Image 1 (tube, rainbow, N blue to C red):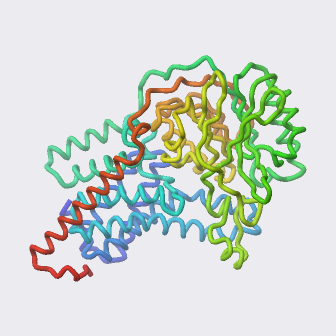
Image 2 (cartoon, rainbow, N blue to C red):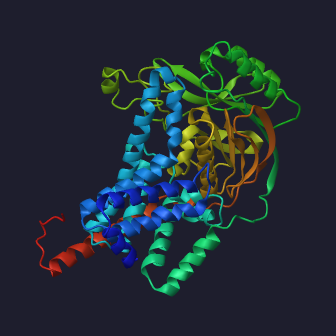
Length: 502
């Protein structure tokens, strides 16, 4: 590694930044639509090379930022799609959103490399700092852990490590394996490389055991630019009623997020028709509701008479989509949210809650991007029998966005050892078993419905029991050790403690 780092350091500055950007961009190939999982190790290796070749804290910061920007900007190209729904009004924002989001998320990786260079450039420093940066990315500014490196492993044997370590324990393991392969003895490096090779192999376990319960997933396939069109609304509503009334005897019918273009208080006539079509089966569907001046993005459960028996309000809202942070400022410059129906957007619900489906057991509902957050899923008041996600991925376009969102739903299933039932407006709707495997699905951008068996819940996982706390403590301990070692090294060299690295 020292030779690679030395060669990298000898390159002109622009060449170094270009290579760093390309190294990050190659990592994007690990995610949908490419799904070449080994590519995720390119930016992980590049991070250690950049650290070794950085002559200063500033150099590490800038090169790390270039790598992070390349990775996130290429992976998250779908972020431009929501701005094209009303292109005449918001289309101009799309390139700015992509660049700014790439720079913001890349800053977490940049800070990890800068800290590691400040601390002496050791491999341990980067392992804990990078893992810590990814954990912070999941929490600060409401969090946005989309495209975490462990997401690339969801199809592989290594992805099952999420059941033990969750996304942050997996990040520690991945960066640690790379550090071993690059820094330690050759025999250990060969062993680490062999483990990575085996880990990337696809799963070949026996199918998960199934319950006797059948769930119907409805996918109306309403494009976002047509979803609220008065001429198209009857077509999409009637389509869902038709699928609800289709032959078969499901134990539960699930319709996606904001599937009806009404408020709950104005929808009773449609509820009655849906309940009649369901022929006695309970129906869970996404809809908006209002209390006073507050609007909620909600899920309601209808009984056989069309009555609302249970309600869940989304609590982890999308900034700039469902609510506007610093609303006064953006109102002043005439910039509004994309999905919110009022200036202030939606109001957040009280938090995770369980919905009782009788013989099927309890379910933890997740609306749209709530399934991106491992700690939200782990924050349920008790362990449910299954997870259920209602989402409108029409916002994410027709290619990589919905596929990446599905990958994160699969991560949550593995982490908790629970099946995930997923109903998506434009897809991909499907059933996910406790190992994260999709057992049945409706293709993207297809209207239809699917009757599928509900898998039995798996055993309580280590991560389901502990959550992020052990990994947060381990990362914090590693950072403290790194800082203490750095301080002792400076003192041993007689360096003034107030001197900063250039």
